[in-house]
Image (tube, rainbow, N blue to C red; front, top):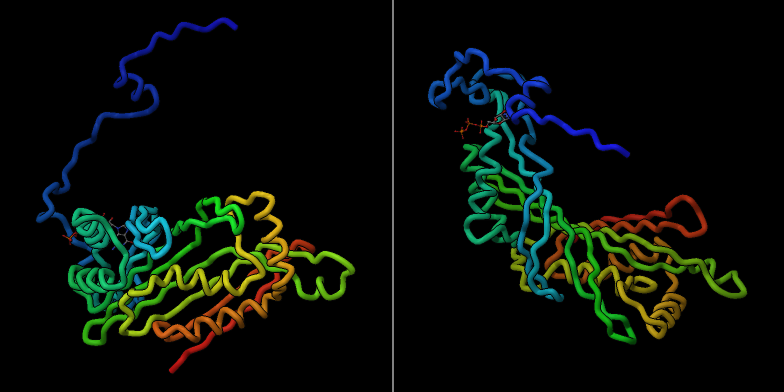
Length: 302
Ligand SMILES: Nc1nc2c(ncn2[C@@H]2O[C@H](COP(=O)(O)OP(=O)(O)OP(=O)(O)O)[C@@H](O)[C@H]2O)c(=O)[nH]1
């Protein structure tokens, strides 16, 4: 194929060629103090807004964990909000990311419950509001060993932490973890001459922490254990044949319906002294159907 020689104009000319024009006459103020501040207009705007702010903010965070790796950096998606009353036009959106940047510059963002209490209180003060909330979603990575070979690889679970602050009321904190497990169908095992169908199940645990929870126990590792220790078998990144034999047999020895999963995980969460209330859901991506099997239950300890 013949290549055509291109007579490339300078970059400015190229931009003009593709539609760029010279700046027009600009009459509006450029200094902040002379700009109208629409969002801070005070009038009766009819309704109070429960929650206004920003979501889908991608930002690195530093995590500590009881499992290996004990420290890791991962990418989180942040949602930060606050109420505004009926007499405010809008919130000050820039202050949410200003607050995030303050924490990044101060040694990096570490989402411990204690630091999120400080963060939400400072955010409410920065916004000149009575409340603020933060929700942080991120993949959390943990090492998993093959049961026989002990070969290590990384698995991950989806974690979420939520903290809310209300002036003169206090803080609430909760977390959720979704992890994958193997579930083997008890019914299939019971009725079949041999084998049983099994599938990847997803267990989601939402827990509300007690007021005095100090993170002495890593909630991520504890919730992961609650799901995996009650499943038919765990999910592994690296399995050699002796591992695969063990995982297959373990699943056959521990058949679970979705109903069994949510009840067994609930029993573990019931025993945790730092959990005030919880919801457990299990969703099995059925290997003999196109649809999923689901179950969920909620419990509050007070
Ligand atoms: N309130 C509000 N702001 C928005 C919205 N969408 C984008 N913004 C942007 O938020 C930015 C302004 O943030 P502010 O914090 O109010 O800016 P500011 O008043 O200069 O900042 P302060 O000095 O902290 O008050 C602007 O760039 C807006 O365009 C929206 O739906 N509501």
